[in-house]
Image (cartoon, rainbow, N blue to C red; front, side, top):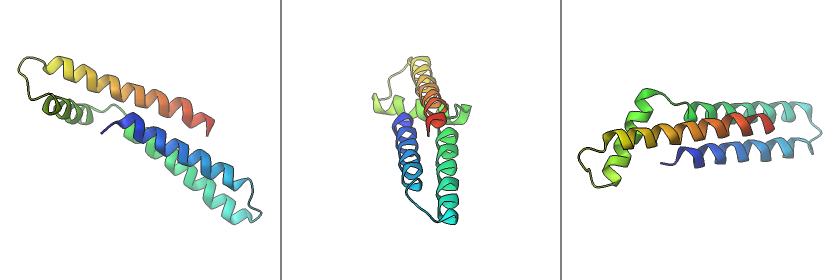
Length: 98
């Protein structure tokens, strides 16, 4: 699973909803839409957060995708960390734009 793509998808959806809210006259509906955009941004940040258990699971996925080679565990761990850090940067950077 590419966390960066998931984060990007959630943030794009939040931005689209916020744009739609500009065209709605009913304040209650606008309030609900804006609450949903905040929820989507928070979900993106949560997915991108580089927690040890998530990094371990992603490193294992990478290891399996590469045919389970011996002696490359650090390489896969660093790759997983990098993926999460990139997703986290995207969530923090784009989350402010939405």
